[in-house]
Image (tube, rainbow, N blue to C red):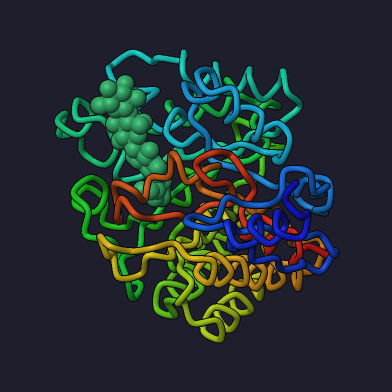
Length: 365
Ligand code: G3I
């Protein structure tokens, strides 16, 4: 009969269990090769139950349909969803007639599962369909067609989609207008066009919250200044805007003081603030031999916790949602856009909650 002490000793040697406790005293287990996340038996409070604002995730409807664990993770942990691509112009208006199948599926899924939907995104230079771009519209014709599109889309989901990214990513790094080939060549005053797009959305659904969304906002002072100038112009012209989104595609190395200074400046607008596409890169050097160690996982958890604590410093009336851009490392856009060895989200590829989840939870008040 092997002595029990030997069995325990062998067990402990077999797994390098690194246990750390989050603020709420729960234990986080990170084991051996890859952080496998939290001990499945540890009672971890779902984010959506603790948060005093929406906890969102970008989702793909086909994955919700095809992957039961993905759907389960969404339903148990999130209170809002954003369509990763189903509600973009390229999907709805891919040809001259609308295709409502994908957005309807997603909105119906949300309704059936008591989830809010954040509409993403009505106007994005990157999502205008080729057939529309090739029409060579002048500014009057272009705007007339976009006005109908906005009214048709926002009108269709009136009362079902509670908020919209009306316009996405119009400024380049530093704050100059982005040198894209769709709107800038057509309009002498692109900002005026964008302001009227907010007007069209408001007219289609007076109750929907209307956002401008961009990336690197809190770390790029020039871009943030341009956004604030646009907001001031909108207000002076009577164009409606309710909120600003920073996508927060950051990393464990993103300078925290810079982030905080920029976040405070963004909050000074008094608008709703949406952390709209949060994911935290760990493989910062895009190394093909990167190893997501326990220490790396803990750095990521600390970064999530820092960002959530920063968000919690907002007055309650400026809190809208924190949305992660995806659910699990299994499907993150970053494995293609950044490096195959990237683990930016709250759930690992087996849908175990990672230390990042506990870090996020610990940051919530
Ligand atoms: O579903 C179709 C499939 O049927 C088809 O065979 C395939 C090849 O054409 O395309 C599939 O659709 C792709 C879709 O993702 C779903 O995978 C689109 O081509 C592809 O363009 C789309 O990429 C999305 C991208 O935005 C462009 O819409 C990414 O998933 C999405 O993560 C990314 O998200 C953006 C935000 O909207 C704005 N901020 C940056 C962020 C990352 O780029």
